[in-house]
Amino acid sequence: MKTIPIITIKPGFSKPFWAGNPLVYPKAIENEGKLNLGDWVCVNDAKHVPIAYGFYNPHSMYRVRLIAWANEGKQFSDLKTAVARRIQDAIALRQMLNLPNELTNAYRLINSEGDKLSGLTVDVLGDYLVAQVTASYVMQQKDLIEELLSTQFLNKKIIWRAHEKSLQQDGWMGDKFSSESISENITIKENGILYQIDPQEGQKTGFYCDQRETRLLVRSIAKNKKVLDACCFNGGFALNAALGGASVVTGVDTSNIAITLAQENARTNNYKINFIEQEALKTLTETKPMDLIILDPPKLAPSHKHLNNAKRKYLQLNKAALMALAPGGYLLTCSCSQAMSLQDFTQILLDAGLACNKNIQIIKTGFAGPDHPQALAFSHGSYLKWLLVRV
Image 1 (cartoon, helix red, strand yellow):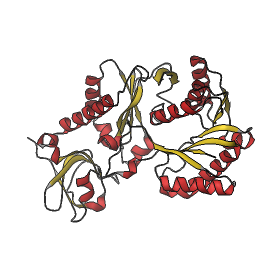
Image 2 (image 1 turned 90 degrees about the vertical axis):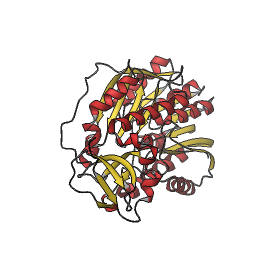
Image 3 (image 1 turned 30 degrees about the vertical axis):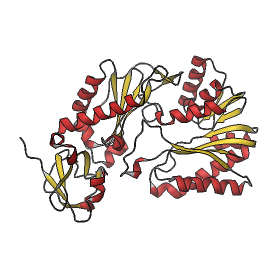
Image 4 (image 1 turned 180 degrees about the horizontal axis):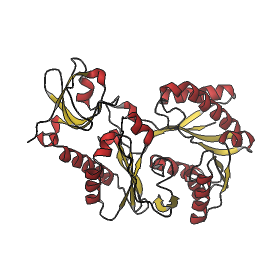
């Protein structure tokens, strides 16, 4: 059996990794020796006790991405065994959540660090698996991962999407793989609503599975309301509002591709929705009073260095949304910026309310759905947060 290279953690630095943090930074390492990109390594604490196993990357700020922990058993020291078990565990969790089911065939299967496969995100979207890659080791292990996924999902095709900016930051210098292209959009079903999505050119994997339960919440409160979906993408919130009995539904997005898909989705489900290609802020400042506004903008703070600028944008958008609401109206406001904490986001909404002379009542607070698990020891994995408020 081939000897596994050992990386030793400095005294006082090992606690997060024992707890399950999957990302080992260079500053935590005492000794790493001469290793190559993608080497399968054992990470030891300062007393030379094995903590976990993972993939080494000399070019990345994430020097090791941990995949398996020593206390899981000796069999997890084997690369293929560890990756296979991570995939099996991910499938078992979704089965426990009753995914898929008769009404839904779109869900998150592998949630990167949350499923102990850092750098790999996989969504099940109807007859396809869409895999988004942000780590070099996944590029190297693509064939193994595809083999393991194909064994579990015999009748589904796999679409691979390489996130070039993340891979560049991770030091990947090799070729970018490309999946066999598909000639048309694919159809998925979520809570009984049909969607046409583009898994190759659309944002992320082509669909935001993380808001599935939030869209259902909008459906439950939309009856007889005038509803504005201010950053509608392919129309998810707007479609659910229509199904929930809203009197008027408008969806707005700056992307012509998104609006075209949203219009097609409305036609497919036979819903009457007015979709407009326009900036959300412009629509919010010009609209007639609405009873329910959904404000789910794209990521405004990709990192902490963008946070202050993002806060100003979130404040501007939320002020406009508050002013666009009829008295007693509801706002579902969201942030998918990882750098934005729930506390900061709540403060922004409070500041917006003070600036607009509005009194705000929090009805519900939430995060991504349960098919987007997070490692307790890795708080950075939590990105989506939302507030449903009455104004």
